[in-house]
Amino acid sequence: MNTIKSYLRKIDVFGVPYSFKYKNKDKYMSATGGLFVFLFIGVTIFIGIYYFIPFYNRKNYTTVYYTLKLDKTETVNFGESETAFAIGLNCFAGSDGTVATDLLRVDHKYIYHKLEEEYVKNTSMLGVHKCTKHDFYNRYDETFDGSGIYDYQCLDDNSKGI
Image 1 (cartoon, one colour):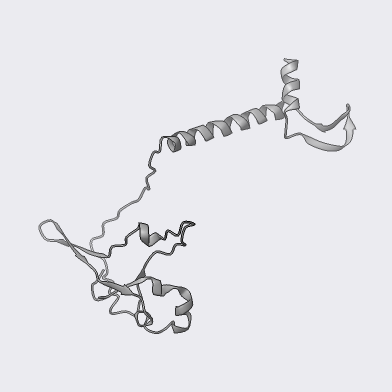
Image 2 (cartoon, helix red, strand yellow):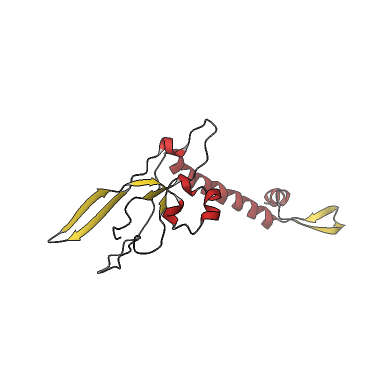
């Protein structure tokens, strides 16, 4: 038992140093501190293994989200308000020269659900063009060139309600 206590005292990293020597020791180390070191290392190893196994098995993580169905919502119409809407990818080129637009495609679809006897899903593609100052109602002309918004895509027809 004394050998275990002396070993735990030796590995106590939580020992408190004091400004004088006591029994030829520079800091106070205890068996309890050594036990906490073992517990800390054990918990750390357990958590590491627990999270490494799904990573090693390449398990996909999922995002939890909630859906709330409303009886009625307000319609948002970008054409009636002076609200600009731009869509795009803002990524730097990789070391090999690959850019996000080479790997990803952004589709612009308008999906409308209408309740008849059942929900009917209507899908149509939206036309887009490179954004111009006119799409932002010429309000931000002085900051438009430096912002990089001209790389984004704006909708051709803003009249459809969301």
